[in-house]
Image 1 (cartoon, rainbow, N blue to C red):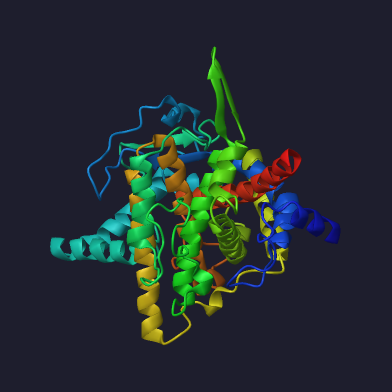
Image 2 (image 1 turned 120 degrees about the vertical axis):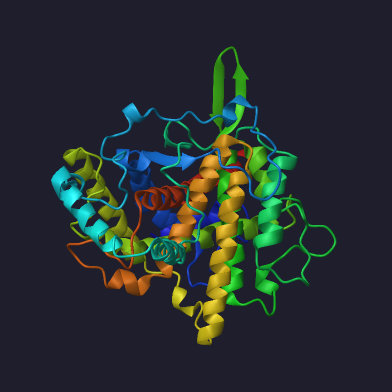
Length: 447
C-alpha cells in the first residue's frame, strides 16, 4: 500500500497537493488509494442500476433571482427526457417513501380504509385548523431540508435517464454561467470581509492574495467548512467538464475526451498562482464530508424494510447488495471527518449558526434554477441536492440511531429523489478524484 502512496504522491499535479488536509486528519494520498481502488469501481456500477439511473427533476422552474436568460441554444445543452413507458413501474409508482414490495402492493381496500381513517380524524377539524396543520407539517418538513426540492407531482417534472444524459462540457459559458457562480460565491458563502478575492472565482489572483481559508483569523470552523464545500463542488464540476470535453465535431462524428490544456488553465499551480491547489484540496474535503454522511446513514439502508423497489425482485436484490458493499467499504475507512466539532459551542448560538448554514445552502440550491444550460442545470441540481442530503444526514445522527428495524421512521426519512441524488453526487466526486489521477498521468507523459 505504501508503494501506491508513493506513486500517487509522485504523480501529483503540484507538490502542494499532498499531505494532510486542513480541518481534518486525513491525507490526500490515502483518499486516492481508497477511492480509486475500492469505491470508484463499485459506485460506477451502482449508478448503472435502474434505481439510481432515473432521476425525476423539473428543469423548467423559473430563476427566482433575476430575469431568465433563456435556455442555451447549443445542441449539447439539451436534455432528453425519458418516456414514462421506459421507467420501471416500481419507480414511477408515485410514493417515494415506500421501499419494500409489500408496501407498494397494498390492496386498494387497505388504502381506502386507511384514507377513511385519516378522513374521520380530519372531519372533526375546522377548515382553518386543517390549513394550520398543513402549514405546520410543511414547516416541520422543511426544517430538515438543506435544498429547495422539486415538486415531483408537478406536470413540468420529468424522468431523466442519467446514463443517456451524461455530464460533460457543453459549450455553456460566458456571462450567464459566470453570474451563477458569482452569485453563489458573493451572496451565499461565509467569508471574511477583510480578505480579497476576485469576483470571478476562476480568475488568477492579482495584487493581494486570493481567499485562503487557512489564513483567515476569526473565521469559525463551520464557516470555513461551508466555503470549502462550495469550492469543492465547483472544482469537481470543472474536472468533469475537462475530462469530457468536446474535442472534435464534424462529418457526423463527435469525439469527447480529456482536455489537458483546459485542466491546467483551471488547476495548474503556475497558471492559477497557487489557487488550483486549494481548489483541489477542497474537492478532497468535500469527498470526506459526503463519505462521512454515507457512514452515518448506513444503518438506514441496512434495515430489511429498505429494498430500493423498482418492480424487479432480482434487480432490487442485486442493487441492495451492491449498495451495502459500498457502505461496508465506507465504514472501513479509518480517517473520517469528525463533524462533532461543528456547532458545538453555546447552545443558542450553535442553533442560530446551524439555521444560517441551512438557509445559505438552501439558497444555493435555488440558484441552480438560474443555470441556462439544461444539462448543466440537471447535474447542478442533482449534485447540490446530493450534498444537501448529506448535510441533512450529518445533522440527524440521533434520529438515525433510533430507527425502527421493521417500520418506516417518522423522525428521519429519505425520499427516493434524495437517495438517488445522494449516491449519484458522491459518485461524481469519486469520478472526479479518479479523473484527477488520469490527468496526473497525462501531464507526466507530456512532460
